[in-house]
Amino acid sequence: MSRPAAGGAAVGAPRGAAVEITSVGRVFGTGRDAVRALEDIDLTVADGEFVSLIGPSGCGKSTLLRLVADLDRPTSGQITVFGRSAEQARLAHDYGIAFQQAGLLPWRTVRGNVELPLSLHGAGRAARARRADELLAMVGLTEFADSFPDQLSGGMQQRVAIARALAEEPSLLLMDEPFGALDEMTRERLQTELVRICAETRAAVVFVTHSIPEAVYLSDRVVVMSPRPGRIQDVVTIGLQRRPGESEQLREEDAYFDAVRRVREALHAGSGVPSRGVENR
Ligand SMILES: Nc1ncnc2c1ncn2[C@@H]1O[C@H](COP(=O)(O)OP(=O)(O)OP(=O)(O)O)[C@@H](O)[C@H]1O
Image (cartoon, rainbow, N blue to C red; front, side, top):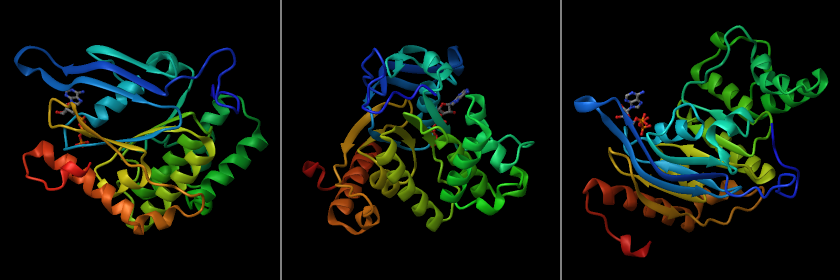
């Protein structure tokens, strides 16, 4: 993990934006079968910023995240992560990822999966065990440390994937509906944990979700995407005051409900459904 030293700057170089997406497009296939998944995407995610992507099914949210993660390449445009190409960032392990599919190694125990990124980067056995204990406690899976992934429910597997993504306190987290399969209580608990972890680690996050309340609760800005070809239709600044240890109370505050309304209106503005109060944004 190439996490810069405390203070926010990598040795010898300014850290810059976490993610810079410039004029990005992605077309799948060719000719009459071509699918224009993304078009003219420009977005900068600042260091330490939490940005959610929201929009109708098929608008290209996962595609955009995969491009940032260098799991796919844009047809046009450029992406940089902390000033390097997406490929260099991937090779340098600049980010942790937690996608819809947990993607665990079935032959490794829960603990073994969580420890994997740490072992890949040479952490000692005791340090790995300590960190895995912390992470498994955080996601409520201490008792399942020695289980194998196929002995867990889908939601539990997803919690292991989240713990694994957080193992090295990455400077950037890429998350594609990581809480989608969870029950509401677990989901809220992990959202709260994620807010705390981000405050502690100052990680930037790009987070795909279908849930407006989730996007609002977690994010500094919510990027609203249009139906295919996916474009950025609006960017809603959330601006909630998150106080350490009190983030649960946010869910009851007027400012939170107001932000939910603003994101809903921005989404509806692109769907042709009339919305009131957009002028308040
Ligand atoms: N590998 C691929 N080959 C062809 N088409 C693809 C591929 N990946 C994605 N697409 C298409 O690109 C479009 C965007 O897909 P994507 O999965 O990014 O949308 P999404 O917004 O994440 O959807 P959802 O909210 O349903 O998960 C869709 O029309 C999809 O069918």
